[in-house]
Image (cartoon, one colour):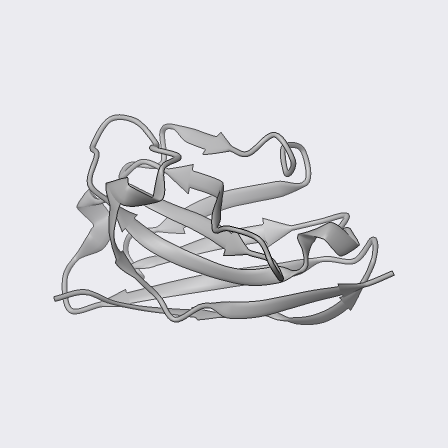
Amino acid sequence: QVQLVESGGGLVQAGGSLRLSCAASGRNVSSSTMGWFRQGPGKEREFVAGIIRNGGKTDYADSVKARFTISRDNAKNTVYLQMNSLKSEDTAVYYCATGTTLFYVPQKANLYDYWGQGTQVTVSS
């Protein structure tokens, strides 16, 4: 069983930055692809960013490219999402998840098996 705990969310003004963390326990997730998703008010959950197990490949949603950066520290069993130049449309609950693929980053939620509880990010304009 894997437990994922997100942290780092909060209220920030447009143009500001936040760094989300996802701490994993219960299993060494260093061999797993990891992803970040988000779900805004009245919207479906959407892919944000992902990183394969050794960090050698990442993928981003078009809406966050050049603004968000995903990284991982396998020694700490933690994945990060650095979010810069935040916009009001980035307001959402952000979730991390463990992926079931090895060599690429899936963008579909059904290819992720364990999920955290989420952390709220609110961007005020």
